[in-house]
Each structure stands twice: as structure tokens, then as C-alpha cells.
Image (cartoon, rainbow, N blue to C red; front, side):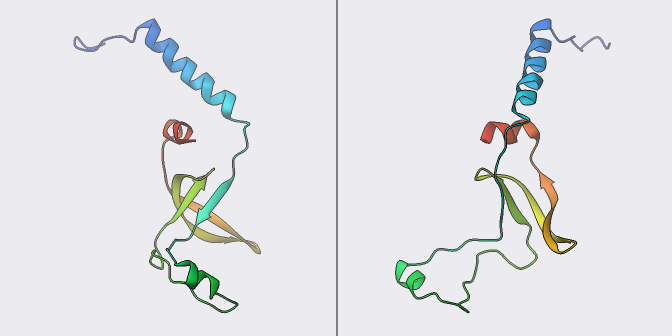
Length: 104
């Protein structure tokens, strides 16, 4: 170990271990994963006029990464892919696990 480096104290090690243990406890809790294509704001008047075939312009550009939310909290960005006959999402940018859990 270099002269200026300090060895983590046992308290710091216990804190790190308890943080990992806390994450393990949460691993089996189910969350709702949602992919947000985009959003916009409408007046109620315009919302009431929507019908089949209506098109609503979103604030996101075509090709922009999509937001991936867990229980309504943004945890990543991604892109749509096809998995056989179904849509899927490829994660392209992910927040670190501790930040994700803190936001949930």
C-alpha cells in the first residue's frame, strides 16, 4: 500500500457490506418496467377531439433514445428492437444500481 493510501476502517467495510446486503434483500421485489416513447401537453379540448387515426406529435425526435422507467423513475435509456414477433428494448445507457434503488 502506498504511503498516502489509507486502509478502509472496519466501520467503512461494514457500511459497504450492509449496502450490498440491503441490495440483495431488494432483488426479489417486482417493479413495473415502462418504456416512454415521448410526451407532449394537450389542452382538454384537443384531447377530446382525438379519435382513430389522429396523430399527436411528441417532443422527442425519431431515433432519439427512449426513456426506461421502473415504477415511474427513469433508470436508463434504450432503443426498440424486435425479439421474434415481439418488441423488446435494448439498454444503451444505464444509471448505476445504487442510484436506481435510491430513486425507487
